[in-house]
Image 1 (tube, rainbow, N blue to C red):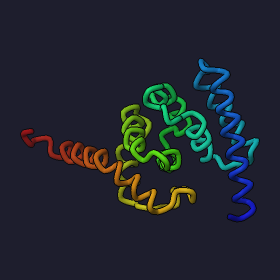
Image 2: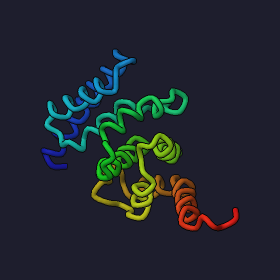
Image 3: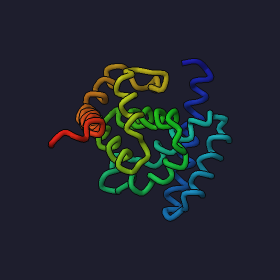
Image 4: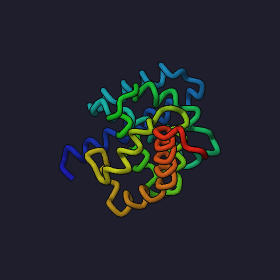
Length: 174
């Protein structure tokens, strides 16, 4: 990695730790307070604006996300950070790939939950599914892992494609 890459990773880790600590100490923090904190962490670490989504996902979503209902709890924060921006949604998917490297089975569940919470749009998920490795994919996610995550997501992708084709052909009898 380049020196800047190493520094960015260090800066990212500091921002993630700062955010995680805030979330632990302020379990009832408002959406606005969390978004402000994440923005401050991102700026203080001289990271790019789209890194806010990476900082927050790494800080907030744990391997116990399902049991702890973390996606339901934090969906409004992610929604505020993404603000309907498809590019940020792609970074969200990349962030989920990153945190699911060790547990690929969690990936499809997370994508589906963020879709159900209206944070990820169908169009964004289907574009991601078609693109393969892209400029959004984090360097830490090697191709084998990315392909495995994509495989785990297949049932969700197929479900969205079928729902999409039913929308287009609403005269069909199910």
